[in-house]
Image (cartoon, rainbow, N blue to C red):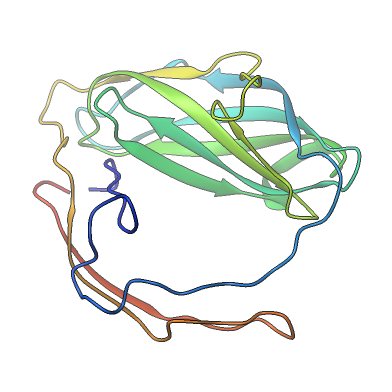
Length: 193
């Protein structure tokens, strides 16, 4: 299920295929401050996934006066630790510009989501790769609505998916001169979704 997160690698679970656990990426980052969430709102405040997926909108006002906002992720985090991530960028911008803009992200909660209060998280990156994560980077909190109520009177999926195989096409890349492709082959199993 896409509702649960399992971390593999150092300090977490071992990858299923020994010897294919690591690759490195070389890149630089610029100066300046990371983007800030100035305002956040959620509409509607609840979704009902009893008979299928349901959608709500997250609206963010983001500022980055040094480098300009580039892209981000909105996460919704369930009561038992499940997480779902939604990428967004300039195509979700509804007003403003990269330095002070409003973005609207449509978030779909899947059918088997656990009922209860889900909290929001936001990760933002600017054009120089400076990143800020809410609520993980203290002292920054989301300034507004930071939760959604999920209603589900049917079955819910709280079981963690299992990775049964993992293989990377290469163990090392250098992106100093140009982008370098890496192909990952992963096999996952899950019980409901």
